[in-house]
Image 1 (cartoon, rainbow, N blue to C red):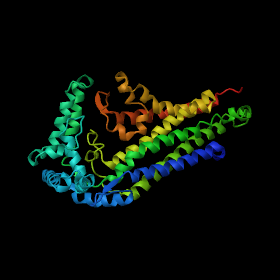
Image 2 (cartoon, rainbow, N blue to C red; image 1 turned 135 degrees about the horizontal axis):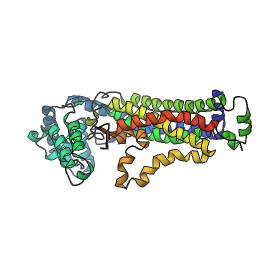
Image 3 (cartoon, rainbow, N blue to C red; image 1 turned 60 degrees about the horizontal axis):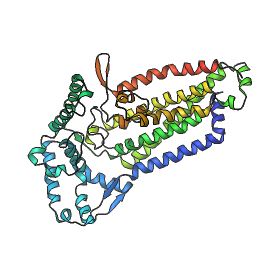
Image 4 (tube, rainbow, N blue to C red; image 1 turned 120 degrees about the vertical axis):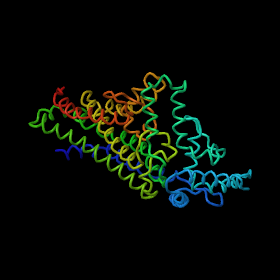
Length: 407
């Protein structure tokens, strides 16, 4: 019976079109993740794609290891020498590109210096050019100092309590240093476009599961369905199982295929490095590696799909309309865009289910919540809350459909 319900979904034209859209989504997202990495060669020409990945990795591997004071001094020294070259001083763009090509190997570390010595909410690409070898040794202390300066600024002073400020500062201070640096471009590429495939994939899947329970009402076959011997028991259970089978299979095929393809093309190195060694996640207060962030992204996306698409199926039962049901994922994803400007709602939006589909963004936010007398970041709260909420939805879905009346 479960397989019959699944076949009904994919036998429709909408089901076949949805599969084609998901296949196209996978192909395009993989291409974007790999092609967005570029490399400037010694001639000043820009190279993209897999060739760029390999060339960039070759340059960066020379800097793998712990980012100690000596390494930081070396970066400042080499950066200054390149800046003094004729290519860097030239007004010709291609000559400037030749100079930049020599910096690519240590560019990630240079970005760390820029972030540490700028104001917390600012970034100046040229800040490292004015840092001395003596100053750069205090990079890790500067990270904490800039955070403390921001937390006590007028900008956010009223937003955090003293206990919350102490929590964030302690998170920064307890982060293991010196950081270990390795080429992590592959993981960063996967994480950067993960939200695209997770969010759009969920919207497409919403079209599929919205018709699982409303199909009989659309074809006027509900009287036959509910009056049959197992219509209000095994048949309903089969629909519930079919819905979750579709969600689960499609999600894991999408996310694992995407991750495997991108990592195969860009490399799996650097997975054990702290996310703070990257430009994107450099200011995050969470103590996790790139591989751990990938795991959070994968399982967070799955919990998000289960919760949101179960709501979609439940609405299709209550309204008997796949059109109204398919609006649920859109509302959940796009509502924050319309009400995000209201600061009074910021705490609520930090716990909105879309955070599970966008772990890469959520990991950079400084949303804090008090749970059981303890302060915690949004991610553990969101994971726990929606995992628990999801547990009550399948029984509710089953009972709601079982109690459905016949027109």
